[in-house]
Amino acid sequence: MFEKVLIANRGEIALRVVRACKEMGISTVAVHSTADANALHVRMADESVCIGPPPAAQSYLNIPALISACEITGAEAIHPGYGFLSENARFAEIVREHGITFIGPTPEHIRLMGDKIAAKQAVKDVGIPTVPGSEGASRSASVAERVAHEIGFPVLVKAAAGGGGRGMKVAQTAADLSVALSTARSEAKAAFGNDAVYLEKYLGRPRHIEVQVLADGYGKVLHLGERDCSLQRRHQKVWEEAGSPALNAQQRDEIGAVVTTALGKLGYLGAGTIEFLFEDGRFYFIEMNTRLQVEHPVTEAITGIDIVREQIRIAAGGALEMDQEDVSFSGHAIECRINAENPFTFVPSPGTITQFHAPGGLGVRFDSAMYDGYRIPPYYDSLAGKLIVHGRNRNECLMRLKRALDELVVGGIETTVPLFQELIKEPDIINGDYNIHWLEKFLARQKRK
Amino acid sequence: MSKDTKEKSPVDAAAIRELAKLLDETKLSEIEIEQGGLRLRVARGGTAVMAAAPAPVPVAAAPAAPAAPAKPSGPPAGAVSSPMVGTVYVAPEPGKPAFVSVGSTVKEGDTLLIVEAMKTMNPILAPKSGKVSEICIENGQPVEFGQTLLIIS
Image (tube, rainbow over all chains, first blue to last red; front, side):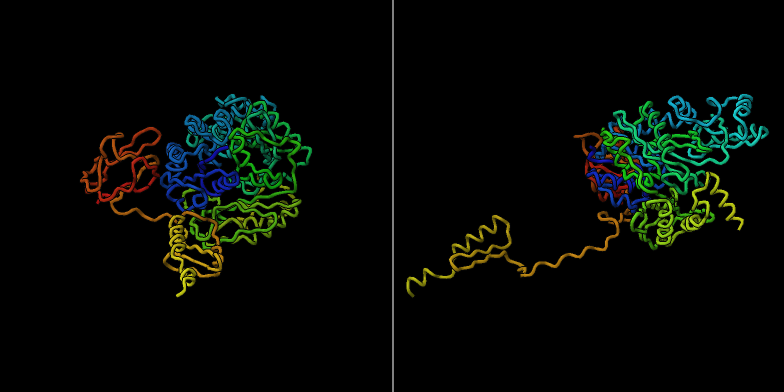
């Protein structure tokens, strides 16, 4: 087992990893920009190293500084968290070349799943259902047109180097296709440095359902059930649930088996999540995330499995101790991502927290790096905290969520808590009857009021 | 005085010296023995701590973090800070004399120190001319971004 791990991240996820390491008796090294000198993860880690000025490019994305920080502290492994360098294959390679363990999958798998066209082909080859679309990149407009007619309009033009909801344009009819293609290409070139695009059938009212997996270096792959992350604003998840209100136990077992068999064939290592669109009882692969996800706590709540601990154990060469039959699902969990933003305009609200009280009690977890007097810096994302509630069933969860949202106090900044307080009153939310377009439509209705 | 009284003197100087020697050797602050109905206590000079067990220290109302106090704000004037994470060296090579020492006069652009990061040696140059008033690091010490290395007045 590692004696010392460096956490190459910040905010609530850095704190999450520090907590897991402490429980395993592993020494922790926090890295931080000058703006994060008083951050909670820095104060709770055993050691800290300032790695640069506030801009992420010069600090949290600064590979030489991170490697240097490992060298001077003697850290044997790096946990990259999510975002930042967590899905940067080059970083994983450099870490490996320096004799440091990267807590995550191999650079080869990171690279494979980072190329959305290659990923789709690779998972298709091992039996995962995919969205009907172009075979590979759409190189010419005429080929694209033929493919689009084959799969049927509307179609989605997607950037091969995109992902996470970025770099997608809809063509509703044949008339829209060439504009959608050229816009998608030029935006992809600007954002990702790569203008390769591919086509997929556009699904009208799908749910976003993803499956969490853990794979060790001895060929064992387990699934930890699914999460429903359909409630999104501008392709950013806002509310996640485990399990999905739309699936029954049999469907869960079936898609879980498809995923674990496929990843076993790929020889995957570590934690990962396969994301699907689910419509009319069918699953369609969209992408695989080769890292820990923000919403992992809802899976932890219903399985009782510490996913970060398993990541660290697997990276240290440990074998998964349980089998699929040992993974059981108990109750229901919901997570709300609380952002430091205005709840109606979503304008970011950094600043000093004058009063902070985290809700507690049975089945309530609040993962956050906030504290009384903490100053949220303006340089990074606006996630202020994640409120996770667990109950014996979904109704109990919703009651608990209402109570916890009412109890949470964050003074001095604006947060999106009021948005969630409105959502839990909505009949569709109470019934679990929503898809990936629901939240945008709700927000548009709110705006008109 | 009868011979008996003298022999039964309550002041057993030898025993006291023995205890005092024991105190020194063991670094205890106090020794007390009882022998033959006689109790001897030898204590180090200074405040005698009396009787009662100390009151339990109240647990500080814990704001999450133990450890690190808030990092001090703003480096001192004339501070030369590290532009990177690495290991600082005061001389161009081991065994060679240091680039500068306290009191050295430097010109803008002079090499003051080296910070090694990932096997590359990065010279740290004087941002202004002046005299080195303080060297804040030791040879071979790990440094972080922004850490004050030395001060030029």
